[in-house]
Every structure is written in C-alpha cells, then in structure tokens.
Image (cartoon, rainbow, N blue to C red):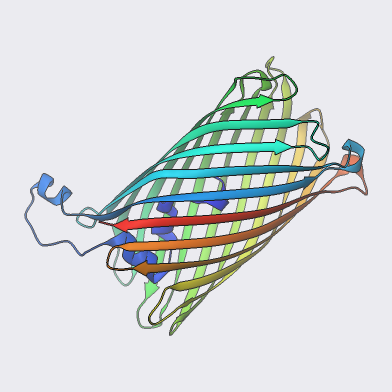
Length: 345
C-alpha cells in the first residue's frame, strides 16, 4: 500500500506514540461472563475524518521532453470507524474516502483528471504472550473505483484497483528498560485495471523491523524496511507491456517528544533506494534506479477527554535514472499535508 497513507490498523499495531495508544485502546474491559453479545458491546475505539493534499512536481528525462508536470491529489477520509475489543484482542477499521487527482503539463497542453472513491477494511487479531511479547496478524484491503478524463480525448475511462496486504507481526516491550521492538512480515497483492489503458498486477513480500527506546519524554527509534515485488503490466489489447522485478530498502530514524501538558511532536527522515529490472516488454533488459529522500514532521494533541487532533507535513524527493538514457535523470519532488480529527468512543 501507499506508505504515505498508512492505514490506522498499522498505527494500532506499530505506533508507540502515547496519545495514539490511548486513542486506539480505550478503557480496560470490565470483567464479565461468556455472553458474546455483552463482550462485543464492551469496546473501545474511535470515529474520525481526515484530509490529505499531495502535490508533486515531476521533471521528466530530457530525451522524453524534459518538461515539469504538476500532479495534485486530494484524499478526503469522509468517515473512519475503528473498533477495538480487549476481551478478544481484536480490532477492525472501516474507512470511506473520496479522491481527486489533477495532472497538468508545464505548458498546459495536457491535463488529466481522475475522480474516485476508496473503501478501506482492516482487521487485526492479536495474541498476548508472556514477558512483554505479543504477536498477531493484520489484513488490509483497499478497494478503489475511479474515472479518468484527459484533454487528449479520453473520457469516462473506468479504473479499479484492489490492494491486499497480509502482515503477521511480533512485538516486544520492556517496562524495566523502556525499550522494545516491532517486527512484521508482509505479503502484498495489487490488481489494477485501467480499461483501455491496460492492467497491472504486483505481487511481493516485505519485512519491517523497528527498535525503539524511551528516555523520559523522548523516544528514539529507527525503521528498517526491505521489499521484493514482481510486476506484470499489459496494454488494452492484452499484450505484455512490462514484466519486471522490483526491490526497495530504506532506513528511517524517528525522534519524538511528548510534552507534559500538551501533545506529541515527531520527526522522521527516510533514506532509501529502489531498483526495477525489466525482463520483458518495451524496456526488456533495462533497469531503473531511484534514490529516495523523505522527511516528515507531525504533531498530535488531545483536546478535552475525547478528541485527538493531528497535523503532519511530509517532503519527499525521488531521483530516478534509466540505463536506456545514460546521463539523464527524472526528479519527483513531493509535498504532502495531512489533517486528522478523531473522536474516542
């Protein structure tokens, strides 16, 4: 899934922010018998909404025109509902989102728009273990439907995309040392259909490891990530356009500070790269290389007894090279703004 918009289920499994933990866990369960309905109604959770604006400037390879295109995507989470049942060590999330994307060439000779909506379903089943350990599995499905139109004569081009993610995880926290780690494996499958523009299937695996340590109000950590993925794309007539192998890795140091009478401030910096090797299709035998730089700053604040507000800014720059175009590069610079409001149940 798009890692700039991680689902709240990931936050629940991996977040170490004290305010986020309080928002997602709710009150401790009250002792009761085996009545399933009674247990089901004894829960914590929240409802929420958010808006995210992602703005990209894309400077293409000189051989391919060298123009700078601008692409802006606005995603509005109309409603997110999170349910957490401590009796069952189970949580679930449903979110409904509206999305709007506009892409324009530098000389305004070409414009592409895409309107759509997304359904996100996430399920987390956790198992508590002795001595600070826990394990579990998370399943995410994000299903998107959209319509594309362009100034080049394309109208009402239907799109659909289903992103599946299955992540078993294993976490540890020591109260004595105020330290721990979070670890998960992931199987991912992405099936995209753009009608006359063709289809794309991505299937892969990833591994994530995040150790962290708390020093009073401070928390220091680092996220280590590695992914491998197989891609297959076909044109509208069903012919192979691309078969490729993709790998990505990054390290992301994290620093956060929780104020005594206020909220939590956090900063993240990502350093990574990825590589795509084409084995069939128009670029058979060629390779793409991309350097990834990303910085994130955010703040979350409890308001009253039930509200949690969050604001986040992210800057990213990807620099890509292509063996077919030696000495040239493609640069994507991205600015993303996120505002979120959560009401605790």
